[in-house]
Image 1 (spheres, one colour):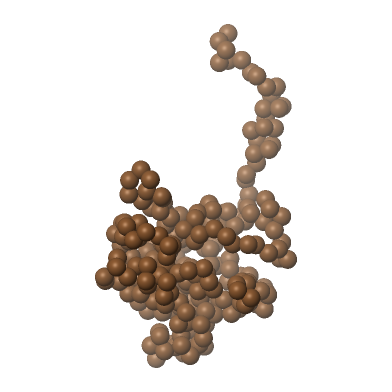
Image 2 (cartoon, rainbow, N blue to C red):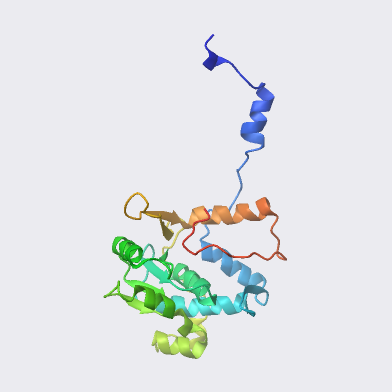
Length: 245
């Protein structure tokens, strides 16, 4: 008998190592998109704290309303499923608002770190070719010498209903409607959620496309793996351009 045919481990131990300790099967809602899960949590705990930053906090309801105002504006700009929207925002409430808004509008976000070298920003934008960018002042400065033709939206201008109504400039949509969850026809879990670009160490940065369903699967796995509950607090220390999936 060849060495290749020898069984090093007993059958039971082999099964335990390969399947018992490595069981990753989990049921998750296959008809859900990322922001749909967030909106369900808003309904369950609207006044619970969702974000804390620099001594300030936002409830789930407040975060959802800010994201909705920006999302309606993005929809008005023509954003729809699988459209790429760049986001270049420093760490803040606006960063999370921007990501949620892009997803709610049906788009897929392309994260750009304001600290990136201009050459990397140029390469990513040239490859992704987004027509809309969500950027705060630091983002505008970072891409100032890189981008010439792109609609740039500041997420900080949608913090309240009055500003949101002015910025959307749509008489047919009332201020109360602007804080409602947008409905995007045809959006499914198989649509893109975001694109993460590689470091480009072997050449140009390459975009990795991530769909909603993959992230929804991950979201349902994490609480079990790390013992996360409604009373847990999570410190977010990685860059927005880091992919946890």
